Image 1 (cartoon, one colour):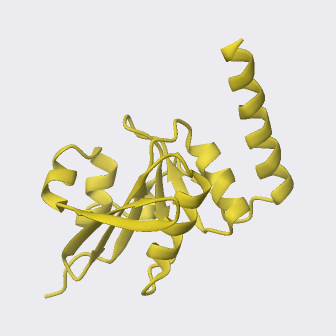
Image 2 (cartoon, rainbow, N blue to C red):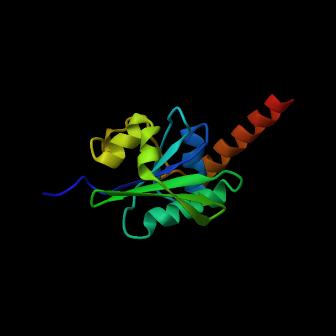
Length: 148
């Protein structure tokens, strides 16, 4: 008997999946970003050994002042690691993490939901540097105006 298909997600505090996808497009990370009540989640496209870690490293560098958590499920085992500024940090207890995780994240990690089952996800794949840059610049302008 085989377990669920491997999966990996990077939990962030980014408030908009389209901005996370744009940042990942600029960083060369292939993900599908999903809005959740606790922040945007990057669903890793490449699950080869080391690839989810490369995604977490890049995302945590892009979000330099915001820690992220990489959660990887392989062979039925879930591992979670906090990342900040491109460096892996403390290991997080997967049980505690899943207890408060959004349903989509839990479903992806437990194999009851596949990446293809996320119709509202925004992908970084194929997003041009121009489009990504424009999206991030527009968000920065909006944030500056909101601060007054």
